[in-house]
Amino acid sequence: MRISLVTYTYNDHASVEELLLQSASWGMPFAEILVVDDGSALPFPERDCLRVVRLLDNKGPGQAKRIGLAAATGDVVLSLDADMRLSPHWLRAALRHLADPTVGIVGATILPALTDTYLSRALYGISRMERREKKDAEVFFLPGAVWLFRRRMWEETGGLAGYDAPSHEDYWISRMLRERGLRLIAADSHAAYEKRRLTRLAYCRRQVRYFAPSVAAVASRQGILPALHHCETALAHALAYAARSGEAAILYIELLHVAHLFTEVARINPDLFPDGTRPAAGALAFVRDFPRLFALLRDDLALLGIPETSPSPMPFLETFFSPLRESGFLPALEAVWADKLRAEDATVDFDGHYLEKRS
Image 1 (cartoon, rainbow, N blue to C red):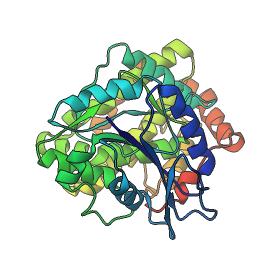
Image 2: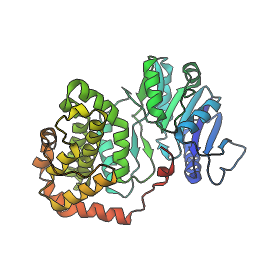
Image 3: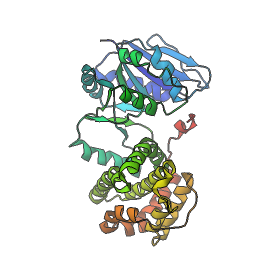
Image 4: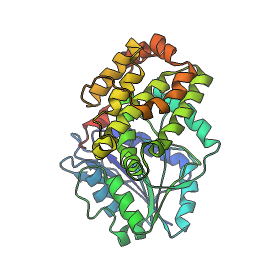
C-alpha cells in the first residue's frame, strides 16, 4: 500500500518542516510527500524527498486542497494542515477503518496542544477525561485539518473537483460523501492536536463554524432544548475540570461559546426566537450582577461581531446555565478570572497567522 502525505503552507514553512520531522516517528514510510504552497511570499524550497505544488496566488485552503489532493498518486492519501500534530499511533490505527468500503474519510476531533494558556490546559484536561470512555465513532462532519482516504474513493466521487470556494471545503465534502452513502469516522483512540495557541475568540469562532448548522437543524426539528445537548456535555466537562484543577476560566469561555453559537443559530433560523430577543442578550442577563464578568462578555461579543444589545433574560439559557450558577463559580469568575483572562490577552503571544488565510 502506497501512502501519500499532502500538506499545505501559506507563509507557514516552519510548521511544515516541523510536521515533516514529526511524521518520521510514525513508523509509516510515505511513498510520496506533497507540499502545496498556496501563494507564499517566499516559495517553499524544493528538494529531492518531496514534491512542491506551487500556486502563484493565494487561493485559500479549499482550493489548495482541491489541487493538492488531485495531484496525489498513492493508494491512500493523508491530508494534514501544517499546524496539525498526530500521536505516533494515530495513522496506523486510522488505516484499519479504510478496510471498510463504506468509509469515505477517516479524520479526527481536533484538540489544542497543551500550551501555557487557560483554554489549552482546560481542553487538554477535558480531552483526557473524555478519552477514557471515548471510542472511534461515525460522525456528521469531519474538519478538513485531518483527512485519510482511499484515492480510488476520491476519484470515483469526484473529490473536490466541483468545489470552487476558497474555504469551507470540509462542510462540502462531508455532505457530499454522506449523500453518496459513505461514512465519516473520527478516529479518536489516539490524539490529533493543533499546535497553535488559540485565543478564546478563535476557539468560539471555530466551534460555531463547525456546529451551528447541525444545532440549527436540530432546533428547527425538535426545539431549542434538544439542540442544547452538545453544549450541556461541554458545560458538564468544563465544570468537572474547574472543580478538579481550580482553573475556572473555561467556564467563562463556555458561556461565551454558547452565546455566540445560539446567536448564529438564530441568524440561520430567525423563527426560533420570534419575540426578537437574542441569545447574546440572554447571556448578558445571566451575568448582569457581576460587573467585571458582564464587561468582559460584552467586549468579547463585540469582537465576535455580535451587535450590542441590552440584557434580556431568556428562559432556555437560564435553565441551561443553572448548573454554573449552582456550582458557586460565578463569584470566582467575577473576582479573579475575568481579570486573568484580560491579562492573558495582553501577555500571551497567540499565533494568529492562520487568520491571514482567506475565508
